Image (tube, rainbow, N blue to C red; front, side, top):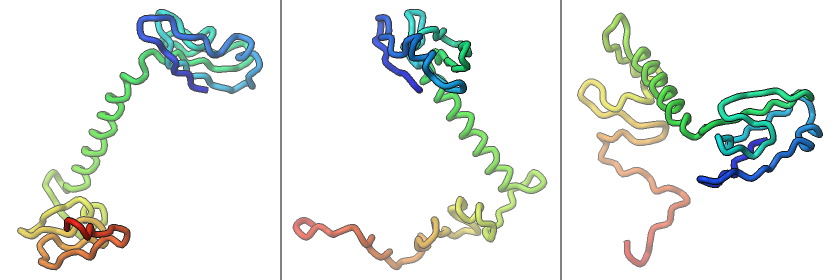
Length: 143
């Protein structure tokens, strides 16, 4: 269960009481995203702490969980970029192999020429126009 009811500057409403927690099955998890110094939505939640009740219910006092998302996203993105750069190099030097499926999907230009982007898309150096999207209609009035 995830609770998120928070009122800035005021005590959050109590949504999950002690009786409700006692009625939950062992192994249940409650994430109280409203946990703060003013209280939380769950009886017994403590900001920044995870606790387990006597009947085996885990209560996570997720103190400002939303603020941690940008850090996690940046870390994931940097790991992906690092992995891609390692995949594009051999013995410390750039080694493009356009027959490699991964490299073929990310290399935009190679050997002085543009490369097709994605499956089924035309070569950007080609003068032929791509076929229209089957579900896209042309505007008859203005186009």
